[in-house]
Length: 83
Image 1 (cartoon, rainbow, N blue to C red):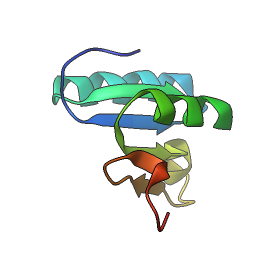
Image 2: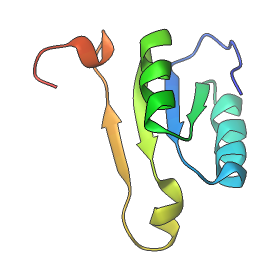
Image 3: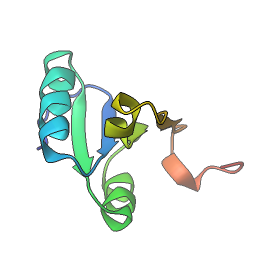
């Protein structure tokens, strides 16, 4: 699901494949480079491989009224002090 657009990288941590496909398409049209992960291992693998700037977590739960989680990562990702 990766397109080399050269834009900021976003990671979607979501188990709902249909929602992931829709969001990936929309973010790519807006100029973002999207990566999808369904497991924690895939999340950390994507963060290690790409300069991820934003992680969106469990977006399907927001539709159910359970809230939404996200984390904006500083340059250098999770290796920065204070995270």
